[in-house]
Image 1 (cartoon, rainbow, N blue to C red):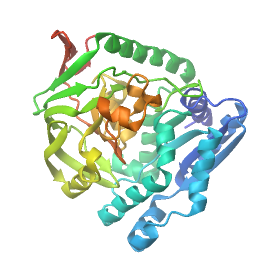
Image 2 (cartoon, one colour; image 1 turned 90 degrees about the vertical axis):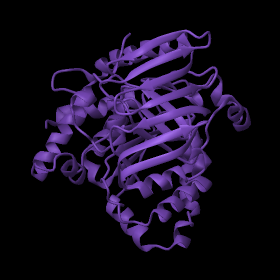
Image 3 (cartoon, rainbow, N blue to C red; image 1 turned 135 degrees about the vertical axis):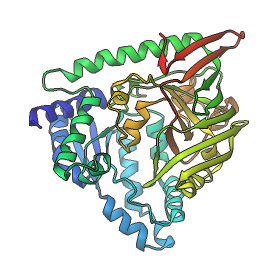
Image 4 (cartoon, rainbow, N blue to C red; image 1 turned 180 degrees about the vertical axis):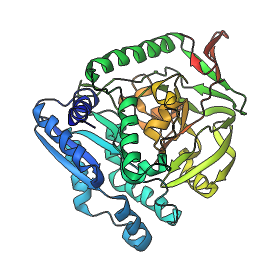
Length: 410
């Protein structure tokens, strides 16, 4: 892999991903295994005249040791300096890049109650940071870079080095980075395509979407009134245009938390808190999951659904054509950033306030009255398929085919 290609990837993330502004603080959340690429991001950020770059390192193996050995009392303690750090990020209006490089199933044998406790306590102490970012009050972007552990999970038959290089190539391919192209230019055109989908869906203003395929999905998702379809580029509260995910293929909006009926069958495994939930389905009634089953890690699914009241309801519905760069790799990445963009998906948990008219300026009470779902979590799972059919129902009773044979028809 040439360094030039990686520099183009880093530049894409800085220019299109967070679109760092002159004299703006940048925070990078990075696994220690991704240090080489993180250095490229830091350099590109300074070349773009960032004020400063703060790198927050993490390590999956250390995290496993932490959750394995510490007591619940320790997990409940989030030091003041950690809270102060997140307060500083918010107060400074920093842009944030998070590198998604998971070690699949590393927390498989960790007590799920500890992970659940950590989620609850983290929300209590630094929930303001999550609300800041999910409200797009400043720019943020989730990207990916391989680790040897992740690569071996994706390509188990290859040697570690070959698996690593193969995964890196697939990440760059899915992110529209090649040896000869200008990825910044190509992403500008891609964002325009997603914008056209958003425009069409917003103009049609559907009341409900009916999803159906041969795997057993037969689901009607009601949408909140005055919902907004988004995807691709977004505009932060500070006025800066940015792209929250690289790669991305989705156009998404807000379901009504009480208006989801029927069954949905997942088409890809869900990597949740280091556990791989496979072969699962959910049945909804009045917006809430009332029945579920999983072939593997059903307890992890149960813990997700029982985290809080909102975790058993939907916070997002996203449409993605089956014919897309990520889907066409025909690879399970074991990473939601990629796998969710290979397929139509739903998210259990918190909704994005940006997906409803004036949502970022409404109170929680006002949002709740409109059908907004609030939760400590937001977990995407995939249910798209090559034979997915989606029919939109308008308020006047008109039915419109949106998807046929797994793809947009417009």
